[in-house]
Length: 158
Image 1 (cartoon, helix red, strand yellow):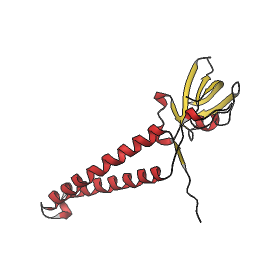
Image 2: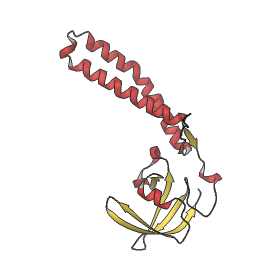
Image 3: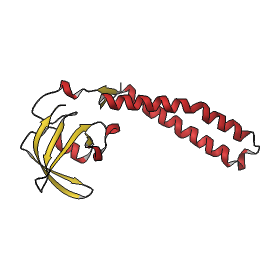
Image 4: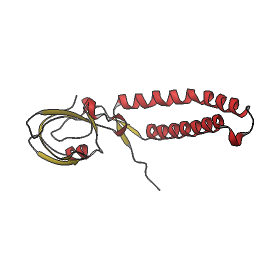
């Protein structure tokens, strides 16, 4: 029997996915209406509007299925309930880069990741390198821009 892999995420990530699912489901009738209208134009083999609407319907349904799968496997984690001296999912980490400049990241799920906002996925190269590390540990990570070196200076659960 296959086991279902849980997908860790923060509450706000779960809420965002739920809202996106609701929005996509409200688009269903609009897409069906567009298909019906295009079908009324006649010959379907040369009807670009019909094919575009059918493609949009397929993409919408695939996205709905993907989000429903993620929500069904969601394991909501509240960082405020966590503690410890190691970096784990949900931790906010302050690092010192090679130039001793501080950078701050929160370890989050894939759907919540936004490096520009200081949120990196636990599956990203840096996220994987950070998990399990402690304060004052050095980290070397290969990212698309090349090799990066960091020193863990602070771990918070906020």
